[in-house]
Image (cartoon, rainbow, N blue to C red; front, top):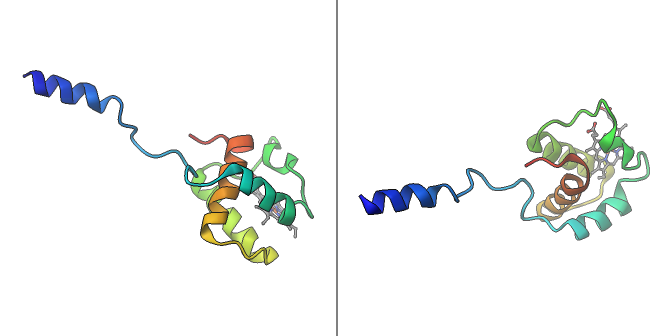
Length: 94
Ligand code: HEC
């Protein structure tokens, strides 16, 4: 009985899913973003009232698409860092 209670209690502290972009480095992401992404829009694009991105998956897809479109040449880990930067500062998905 005691072990069941211990198990139940322990499970309260295991997050159901990992935070989005938690493998990215926001500082690296900021540098990459500021180099390749501010030619057309500044960061107000990410906080506009009718912004289009509603989920972490959409954000990841948009970063990937913009990476390809702009020829930034980012590796997946770098896209993750840009995601970490944008999420931490603008989108705040949990
Ligand atoms: C050639 C111009 C251009 C460049 C360069 C560019 N973007 Fe964009 N981006 C746009 C336009 C235009 C929109 C708005 C599209 C819309 O309203 O659907 C947009 C929208 C976005 C959005 C969605 C904002 C929202 O929530 O509504 C994200 C995220 C984004 N861009 C990320 C990036 C990233 C990351 C880069 C750098 C790799 C980048 N963009 C470079 C033109 C550009």
